Image 1 (cartoon, rainbow, N blue to C red):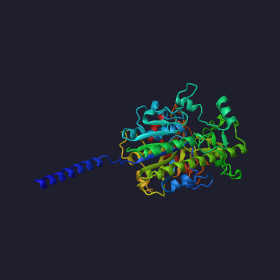
Image 2 (image 1 turned 120 degrees about the vertical axis):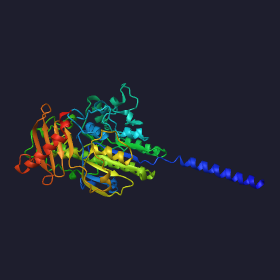
Image 3 (image 1 turned 180 degrees about the horizontal axis):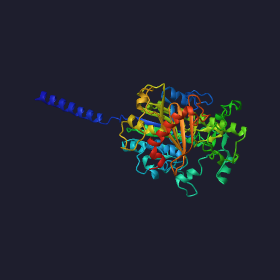
Image 4 (image 1 turned 90 degrees about the horizontal axis):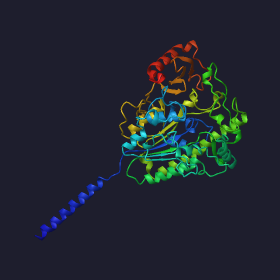
Length: 490
């Protein structure tokens, strides 16, 4: 009897242990990958990892060396609000949708499900840090948390967070510049202040992202975490030590500071964004000295943000999160630094539509690059596939880049589509074609064609050259068939 009792006790103990063990197995961590989105403002692909030597960007270059780098990535609208709307929704711009910086996704496509919202619906913790949607209060329910430096602080003006943010985002640190901003709503187009990295908005943002990474590393749920930097946007404000990385003698103006040969008048703007700042003439060229200091300031902001990105990636690795986190670095559009006499963005030249795009996927070998044509509407289906999520039916207009990530030699697009104002553009592997269209009649009023093999910097418009007549006919045909509804707004 005693032996039977001992045997029964052992069996019960083993059964109890087994049940506890099975219960613990049910509490294993979610295996879906995390996503860290490093979202840059106004960053042209002039980095070391893109074969350029003018700017100092060691941390982004290191990330690129471990990633898949896309050499031919393009935005769909070369202005922040509209470009971000395209990427977040996976939807193209049209005559009536995603037009300029003042785009509100929540108003223009209220039924669209952004990739952030899709992730949230599928159990992801979603945190929007910094500038992701252009407007702070656009689709706030996509996120578990929306945060920008200072925006949610109490203010003595009774302003809502989005309005308070608009009143302070230029973030001058020198007293005279701050005073001018407060009094007039403007200020200089650049600032070199002898302050630590954490002083400016992007430094504060970096500290928040690092804090979030430490908190998220203890969670059982996957996350989408963003670092939406406001640099390299005007004004070009950065700590002095980043300005000092570039001797004045190293700063050069672009060789093609001229209107392209045969370019229509529609192609050349007055660079209105730059004109908003004090010390900048309202018309015409800036002085050579001003041009050089603007270029210097842009470079300084790039190096400043590069340093901050290095801190974030270092933390990601120290926490062991790099083993299951997709890291994506992308810009909303490119930028003019006096090429073709132009500054800033919202133009119909390649330099404002081409962007850096870097993907680090833990289970895909990095250190590779792709010349495949890709566009920002391709980001959404890519993230959905990487995370094993089913996107909303009938919404996405891009293609997943996962086949290219696995094999960078693959080509998925024959052309990419970009729109700015009344300019509708197609970029192929060899050509950049633009039609300026009368939006009332739908008829072209001017055209441009650039042969990127012979003329990568787009200095000679060859649209009227008989040699290219067949190319013009073919690309115009694609534009008015494939993108007919985008032009008409139907």
